Length: 274
DNA sequence: CGGTGGACCTGCTGGC
DNA sequence: TGCCAGCAGGTCCACC
Image (cartoon, rainbow, N blue to C red; front, side, top):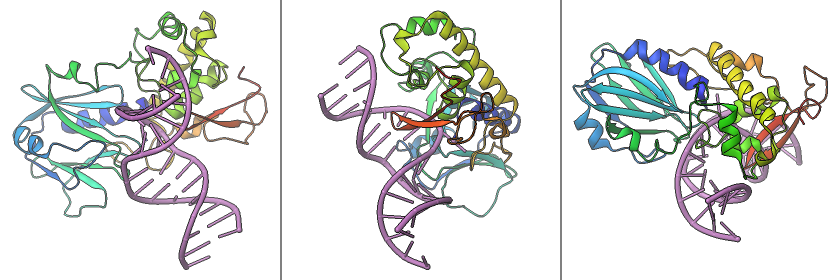
């Protein structure tokens, strides 16, 4: 479901709703997510702790608990974190329920169970196996055309797969990879080792532009994405190629094509993208 | 080492 | 109506 703009939108909502709140109970209905959730750790180590910050790294949400714990979430394809007043009813696929006093709770809901939840400490977080190989944040100053040129040197993989490689750059998934490549005028199949500095300049700018625009529109809701308050995104109304196979390109009127790369659909305009 | 294909899950849609 | 194939916003690991 969620790429950087969606996860960041969720983070912003969670920060407002959760900072200053204390965890009073954790209920686990289904521990088998992407990895088995450590139920004992959750139930013995976080109860009584106060949430001091909600951060994001890549597509991970980091809830900092005073004094030194970090509760980490990943939403996979269909994960949702919903915060609101407590309800009696456990919906199907509500796997983890975090109680935050008598008047508030957070529910992790994930039909496909590709999401994750694990507990670590502030000191161990940077060395966690899921964190330590992550590339730069695309909206940071570390993400530049020179960096991309350097990372791509000698590689033969298609630029679409390169963009979705989290060791290269984080946060870009299937939607924003296609959209960025359209904006940059590059075919998703181009081999990265053969691209020149000018291509990387265009692509770097395009990625930042697309992600910022999606963030300004609170993400993309294709079917079920909502933020922590239940609000849908709006960026689906601005997608130029993703999910538009057979439709006419808004720029040059050619038919948008779909192809499969590494098992995922890519969308591009054969006229605008070379 | 780099790159691909399949695995992990459930749910929805469209064709027959 | 039922059944089945194909598809879906992510990540990881075995295998060439």
